[in-house]
Length: 338
Image 1 (cartoon, rainbow, N blue to C red):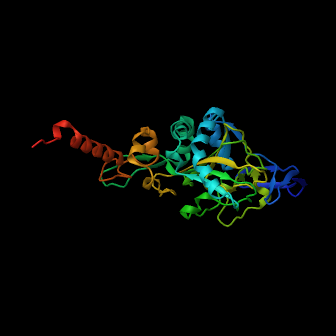
Image 2 (image 1 turned 90 degrees about the vertical axis):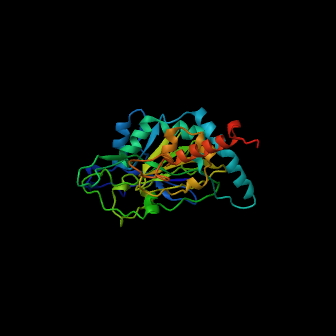
Image 3 (image 1 turned 45 degrees about the horizontal axis):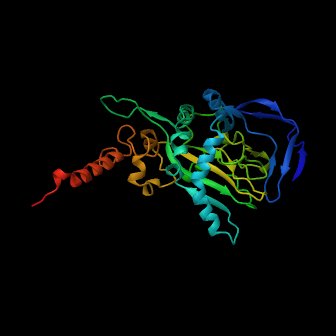
């Protein structure tokens, strides 16, 4: 690993969205097969202070959440992903395995689904950015409608040894989003998605910590990142990285001999098509076991007034109706002995 210093950024840096600051010499780190990245760090803020988290995301586009989880919970979630990851790794044992992915993970990990993703402070933050509020047009007046974020995709991503860094990108390209510069500070309502990354092991520059370009969510669509603008999101077990889908980032390079599992959960506005067509995979039996809050996040309960309906009722109502029909068909009273 080579460490270099750069004086290129010793200048007055005037932007329309920040108080002018004077940069100090930066330490840059080069990892073989990776980008040249800054040694600067992302902000760390406790999940117990959601207002401060919101301010950090508005400023930087992403933040490391401290106190998001604990070692015991992470071990449980790692164990939930392990059988699927091990099968993929075993299948590719005679070649470079790349990045092993355990998709539709929302349904495969009860701890992640019912504990991590139902924390009130976490939901407050996500819905601050992704809640949609509007008053429908109606000549006789309308009641305001509010819809919260829904799950777009979920997966455990295990970056294998020797993998190079991804290209720096924005996640909201999946929805063909383009951006204009936020010339007067972050404009609430401009984002359509967010991502949450929870490390299964301690993440470092060496083992493919996520790369992140602070304040890139404020750029217009023509602005391209320079590699040295990226910082590595190094996290301890129990922390998490929450970021806007408009923020420029990438999976880092793994120069170690071990994989780097990170559990990813991605959200979008209620009226956006989710990235993962998860409803084709989850069975009725699985969804029945989920909390109503988890069912709503995954789109199995209606949003106001009829968004996501199935025959004009909640999709889970069809499950219940199916259960009632089965009970009626199998109950002694419904059995004919003629």
